[in-house]
Length: 415
Image (tube, rainbow, N blue to C red):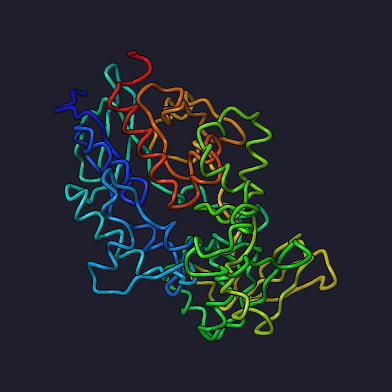
């Protein structure tokens, strides 16, 4: 197939990482073609009423001049300044992302990439519009949806409409009046359970951990107001106070030099399952919480199921003091597992060529380039190489600077 035209770089995805990369590429004089609906996953894959776990000062999308931070958006919108004790609402962050896009990446094309193949001079991309074009480099910044992890035991129930992942819902109000088992102990699980309760549902939280963990509330609105001995013992960082968080924030480039097993463990455990400090009062004493319980089995009970579960229900077999639980629906807040093999828009040849580690995550160069010259990964896909910073918006600056520099220099295979 003849490729009608070729662009220097295509950025796939228009969430925080895609927008930041595009802004930094433009700042280097490289005009990207950016594909995707701005902030789509944040609007359609996260429940209404959610708050960001990260602090306001750690929730800004990076631009080369640093003029389009969350604080700048609030000022431009006539909103007052906020400090560390302010939990950023999801709808505010989405509006901020769209404001950032209009200002920094106005050329975003609302089209979906349905195919990417490797060709002699780069890549051939196919859009859902039927258009085909070439790109010398590609940056994959499509975010978390393809990596949603559902326990094997629940997968038959997903097909029956009796179980789902938290990434499948933009509004949990539809579960009002129904009994829902929420599986997990992290922010997503705890906040989803709280939102279900507030929407009139009857949640039951099921967690393997012996106790639920919550972050500590900020000691002040501004970390500079903390006494200097406290700042010395626990210096501030975008990930939170403490020397380890400071290391992950400031020595992000060194993370990739660690052994595979060490990186996998740190990505899994640093800032592991825990809820934001502001969630505690919305959970404690509000609904049943089964800590120390492991999901063993799940089976349908009654009804025919169907896309919305029909009149059917679910019986869960648990390891713990409550061995059995009957609910109307199961919500898996079981996180994400990066696996390039799940990116079905990549051709089989591309998926098979990318060097993968730790269960499927791409092994990346210092410039976020994979083993396929010119193919870069950003955001959650890069967490196995660069650490937990890549799981948060505050990582957009590091990623965008590295990727834009790498793309401007050209694919590793041509250098």
